[in-house]
Image 1 (cartoon, one colour):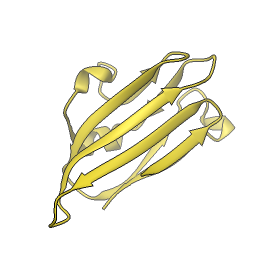
Image 2 (spheres, one colour):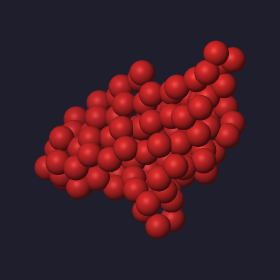
Image 3 (spheres, one colour):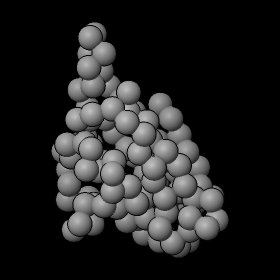
Length: 103
């Protein structure tokens, strides 16, 4: 599990695999502990996975929007390996950026 903390936004990523190391399902659990809205903007990542619950994303399926105090989970199956940058679109200037790695 990888956990990233951006002042107010906590992001945990869990990948479950079978004995052949093939990814079965992944989970991105995002929690907004702040007083402002935050976005997990990761268009390349959301395009590179098969979303199990796409309704949690915005209509364009490019970001996860979290209001203050909100928590959302994104379930997915990885379609390909890669490094996928993500930002909080309103707060990237404050260092709210990172990379999700799918191996």
